[in-house]
Each structure stands twice: as C-alpha cells, then as structure tokens.
Image 1 (cartoon, helix red, strand yellow):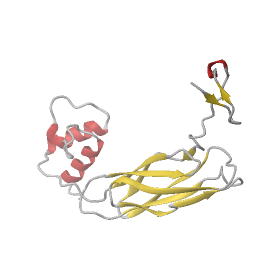
Image 2: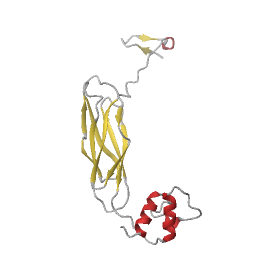
Image 3: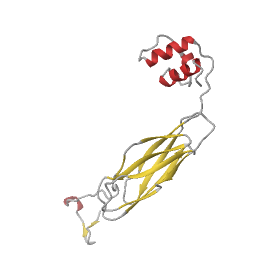
Image 4: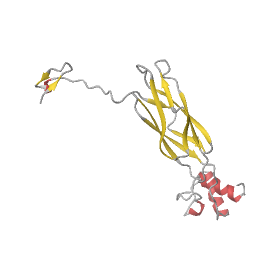
Amino acid sequence: MKAKDQAGNEDSDPASRTFQIEDTASGLELITDQDLVPVPEGDTASFQMKLGDRPASDVRIYIGVLSGDSDIRIQTGDSLTFTTSNWDEYQRVTLAAAEDEDAENDLATIRIDGEGVREKEITAKEIDNDDVPVVGFDIADAIIALQVLAGMNPDGDHLGADSNGNGKVELEDAISILQHISDIR
C-alpha cells in the first residue's frame, strides 16, 4: 500500500505517520427557536433560525417542505442569507396552513439546508379548525371527561369517551365531550 502526502510524495509506510483528520463535511450548525411549529389551519405561524458559528463568508440557506401535509407551505423566508455580521441574529420563516376538509392535525417535515451547513429538519403541525364529529355521548362520558380534566384516572374501560378514536381518554376528548353535552358546538 502506498500513500501520498499533500505534496504528492509517496510514502511506503503510512502506518508510521500521524494524521490529523478534519471533519469538513459537517458544516455550520443551524439553530432554530423551535423544532415543532404549530400552524393553525387557514393561518400562519413562524419560527426563527440562525447559525451556530460565524461563517467565513455569506451563507445562503434554503427552506422547503420535504414531505407530509401538502396544505403546509413556506409563506416567507424560503431563502435566507447569513453574513459574518448577522450570523448570530435570528431570521424569521413564516409557514402557512391552507384550509382543508379533514379534521386531522397533519404534519409536514421542513428541511433547512445550504452550502457549508449541516442540514436540519423540523416539523410543522397543522392545528385543524374543523369539528370532529362527536356522537353518542351521555352524562357518564361527561363525568369521565371531568375526571380527566381534574387529573384523575377514570376506572374501568371507558372507550366510549374516546372521541377521537385513539384508544385513550385524554384532555382533547374531555373538552369535545363537554362541548357536545352542553351544545356549545
């Protein structure tokens, strides 16, 4: 085995040499003020980002929706420039969630990337404003809902109070049941 040094000289015994390995592929760290951004359906929400270290020159950052809910998009800030003087100052990216027909709180993966930086992904969660259909609840379900709100663990099998069908009775279920029982919806 032959190895060459930076000058191109061959070395027949590279094992006798000391090498310093630099991690040049990792790049600058991208820092965001949140990794999960709740975006109300039909509205916008923002997150901010900056660099973890001073760059040697201007760094252009690109932000885009990688996968997930197609209702979520980058409204402003899909391309940001950090310089040697503003690298540690937050810059804003605004996300928008379009109205849709479902009642799901869908997710989208947002990718942040650029030359000389470590890629980062964050999650945008659409907070749906559509009503979840709630039917078949009675006063017993309302009592369970109040127990959940009070921090108590209801005894027994109460999946009838599971308004979103996830197999658990949680705060969201309690609110939904109480709204239904009181005809607030």
